[in-house]
Length: 239
Image (cartoon, rainbow, N blue to C red):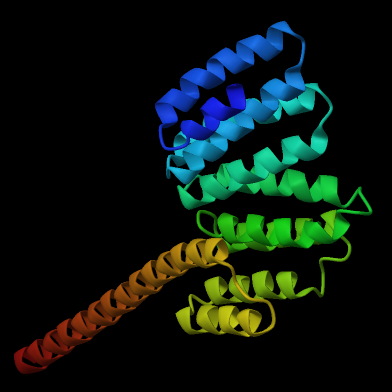
């Protein structure tokens, strides 16, 4: 009966949430925390489909906590990755970075998951550049290469290295080239594209600021030069 009601509530998040609370209480009382976690995850998915990302994050968090309590690490990680995905989309880059880094560290310790690590590190890196300095990104990339010894030399690492160079030189052109080169080999998905567009906007703002500063410097130098010429001419006339 519970699952039938959930299906009927898919277009009614509030009804699904109310049903969830009953389900969680029921399964908790029965000591079936894993089932309670699955109900929480299902409600998170309902909210996700409705575009209610903040609400989805809340339920994914609760589900992850219960899954971890029950030792269901794999299910907990799936929930956390959803949290990271939505956090990045909503501009909570720091939180996304923390989750992706945690996932990468766990992946390298598991032979079945170790090849996923580089993807998590790439996701963390492109979120990181949305709020950090180029120097900080340089340090972070070096740390990522220590976390996963297979990361260095990978396409993912090359992309971050090229993005770093673009930010160091405040070059929007180099940034675009880095993305195009990567996309020709490994298709950038919608999520990465969205985050990288935010990074590009930040770089464009930095480039515009640098250009304005250069103009101010040139104008100041021109003013000083003209002022000095006037002084010299005035002194010559007086003499």
